[in-house]
Length: 379
Ligand code: SF4
Ligand code: SF4
Image 1: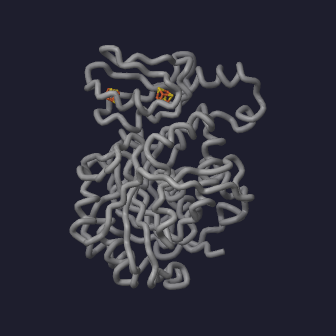
Image 2 (image 1 turned 30 degrees about the horizontal axis):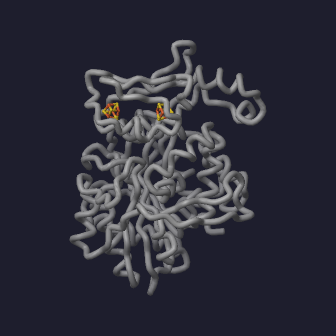
């Protein structure tokens, strides 16, 4: 089990600078032993939550993708694709506004349309899911390389290398997973199942400008000046959590992944090379508060009415009428059919499962996550 994580300074979105840091990070991780792409078909998977201006730090930066493409060419990849599928995606989605598809064009690489799915069937390693519908690019490539952005996440607290694979599920096909796994712990288990299914080979994390506050779509850009890399995506995520001041053991995805014993046996296993976490730790990074976190025991053992009560007491989406442009994207993505657009957005809080997909896709920051009026919980 390779537990190495390269942690290096990288202060600017300049493809030449990033490429140098990527080369160094790969060497620290073990070079060819950690990632051998010679003659292979590669998918580079950036994080495109939605197609947003790059200054907002919602997506992996296009210059980060450019550097990764150049590295793959240098290492002898035979074919290179890049792509992602936001929750609300039309067929032929191009990631134009954020600049990712233009970089592909300039570098002679295919930006792949994730509209068409293929089914990954049951595996003994899955805990929650019988099969996944993922983009058919998964069948066409030999290796997937994840290019996550370091961000906070209203539902999962943190989104990094493992969570990034959720974008392999085409567009609105993601919604049923929110309905089937409405709690943080069950949703995390599903994400770890998906991770075992698609087996990304490596990750380079864009932590040059990260997102703090109410991520993953409406948070604030924060210059963090770092690049992380590893063939062990769990080790990378744990390291990133430590840098921004989360105890990695209480982040649901990390917790479930550690429990499986496949990638690490404990959160203290990652071997961090280059800089140390203490060198770069950000003490005032604005995180999602863990107060009011639905307990895992409750999630599994409590009767239905208590689960409903728990949801009622959870933070909830609140719609800002003056900011809303009535685009209807939140209505279309809502897996619980809790929203209506009737002159303004109307929400049925009894139906709402607090997945915050609406918050993720809103292009105008017209949805705030606020604590329940019955509790002093999160936020
Ligand atoms: S209203 Fe928003 S948070 Fe509630 S279920 Fe729908 S998408 Fe999820
Ligand atoms: S709340 Fe946001 S996503 Fe929903 S209709 Fe208004 S602007 Fe669009």
